[in-house]
Length: 244
Image: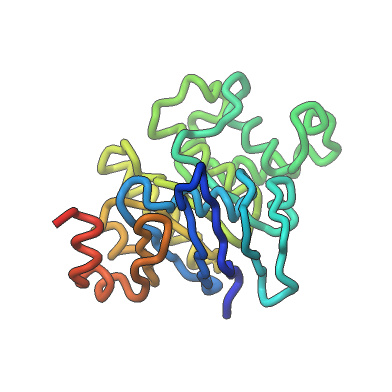
């Protein structure tokens, strides 16, 4: 069953086809990998689908409902879509716990401070931080965390949003091997819970380990898609991705 589909999504910058007529379907409860050389359109595609930048054309459909013509970032909560970024986005000057509380309440910073169900939200926040291995950092300021811990906190914020569709844009970039294992374990658990995950990643071993479906971007278009082992064996994919 398709939980998310795009139809001819496009974005051009000064005549350059960053994303051109991309039509994809994402199955509920699956992990789909998006790969391709730098500048191939992967992150731009995610930015379009999550409303970070406006599309030029195309539609988004959720669970076979009416196609959405205008994709706005502030609609993502309603659509049950959440995402991480290549550059980690956190509230630097507040605690790890408060970063999660903001995501749980789905409200602005000031409004969240006066939330009536504080105890209930705090219990859930502690559960999420335990899940990602940050319980010992609960009272630390976000800016005090290491790079890997910051990545985990952003993932924790995404989990707290209780979304059904999760976009992870290069969550492994710059991580040490032990942290890579931890992030992989979190992603696998999210799939077991029934979440739908779209993963941008350059490490093909991780793609083979995690993904049910693989999409290869090249010059803003889809070059190939299918089962990871089959797609990665294609000569045109090797040539496009590795430059061979």
